[in-house]
Image (tube, rainbow, N blue to C red; front, side):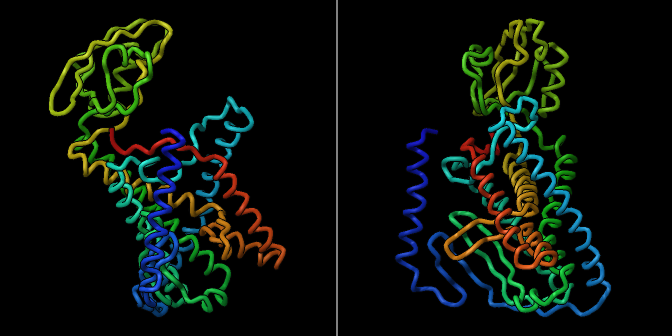
Length: 378
């Protein structure tokens, strides 16, 4: 996408929200609030702390597990971001991490036909995240003041507001459990859905979709196009990316010292066709980028979206991040945890150090952004 198209998309989104804000800013109430880039809907409910019970005890123990998970995922975050940084700025040829951080911009990094799946995946991940905060907070003796849903730009979100007075007075360990609860819940959902998808894959995998074809590659010269679904290679049924990789290895497509001729049976727009490809020596691929294709497509893509955004939300929230805004800093769960720990250790200087470090991490993320589209289906 050209820079002009990116600018047009961003300007259009901002203009839309500006109009919404001007027209409706004075028509909300306590439960309905219009902000420049967001709509907040409060449920108007409050929940008291849980009474001591087996359930609350289990949740408090679960909170301890969440702390370990948050630390581990923060390590994964910095390992990934560090790899991107080395690769981009230090010429790290040995780095195994490629790509960049992708902002979610409809029509730019999110194809519009994928947008419903993205919104669904984010909505489910946000709901899981906030419900976990609520349960652990109440188990730790904290009152929930309110909860609700929000739309930021075009993306759904959920929120839980613990009573600030309770949080400030709570022991440090209780606060850390509260911060890590959403991270743990998202991580658990990711692993559960990943396992379910692995079990369902033989039933719902239909073929391997092509969503990018390299210019002047054997694939392009043979007539392969984006959107084609590979279902057979040399008469061998191919349903998953693993199947395709295995067959390509067996027949020598990935061997640069061999020239290979192969026949692909592809599915496109309800029809099948055979395409013959000649891969010359000196290449280790036919020049395609692929992704899994499911039937029914909606089921597979929906599960993929929920799984992916639960993982993203878990890792991003585990990291210490602070978004600087005119009204103050918006902290991730990891940012809150780091601030409270350094506050306990060093007092006011620790809070300043935490905020500076978290803002620095956010700036690093901004510097690593790329507008490569997020593709959920071919």
